[in-house]
Length: 286
Image 1: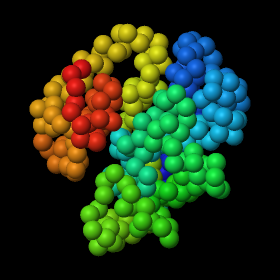
Image 2 (image 1 turned 90 degrees about the horizontal axis):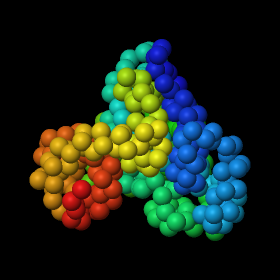
Image 3 (image 1 turned 120 degrees about the horizontal axis):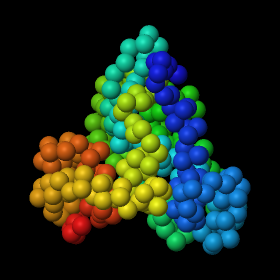
């Protein structure tokens, strides 16, 4: 993996994901106050089982590992990613290249329901219980990323996985063209992140995903500021797509709404309307 000085590597992101997951779970799902220190993973696992959220410690651990993947996948989708070649050449990474084969950018936070597996993660839980599916298998479902090495790579099933991403590539020949033109030239390039492109504080990151405001020290004040910032975006979204995104591609949505995908998703998630809007249903009033 090739990471310019001062940049975060893909491995850095993976190492931070467990800490973020534990914090979000403890302060959100387990309703602990912000000032209380986050306990070790084993204690969180035991509390999830005791609360009935997971049926066993193994399932609770699997759930938390999938949450780590959710965070990484959504950071790849919402924030700018830089590709760095072995020679030090840098370029902005196309979003379709970093997409997950199971469209994690459409998933709600896996810890948000009454039980793990009650939402988009239901198939993951089924295969975990009835097969040999583990978190490492879910991580391997990025069609163009070797998550162990943090570099652009292709696998035997990459073509199939690309068809399952939220970006889509149309007919099969479009997938082949996309791979040849936008993936193969960058095989072996490292994925990294410019700190200036990422939030300065964890609370900003969590808020971008529509996660519980109880994570923030001053939730009420921050919520008012965030609501004000998203108001104009929501107004444009309702005017351009009052009945939701439906089959519209993101390039068209961004042009019609007048805001970036990142801003649109942030605003919708802040108002709790992302899931309905992305499926093409009527967006309600804030």
